[in-house]
Length: 186
Image (cartoon, rainbow, N blue to C red; front, side, top):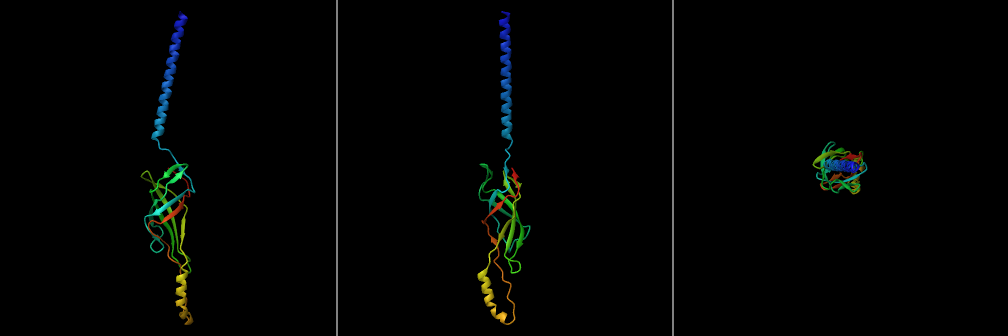
């Protein structure tokens, strides 16, 4: 009888220990899940990721200067591994790096641009993109007209004017494709 009583007490104690361990591990698991849910998941947007931007401001070789800021919106979601990193419509900020007006000596019009930040969950996230280089077109028809009107001046010892290509203009709503130069962790 003593053995039976001892066995029963031992069994009860072991059962209590198992229940206590199960409750403790369940409690720990719940706490871990709650902590994971409150901490935002980190996502790295790799370098080489494309960002299509629709300009809000117009940019041109006539009116823009190096250092001028510009604003646009993402025209597509930026998706990484099936997760949306930056949503369509997010505001992006950029700046003009270089402006080259067209001219015979200078060549074609050029604009060099970069993005500096993108909005994510209401905050600006600094980014670094590869330099976007826009190059103007030749103005062959205009050049030919200018040269043909100046033929008489050449015969009189005049000089042919330095003809130029056309100005480079990106009006509002122009879409430009930028590429991330370095990864961004959000």
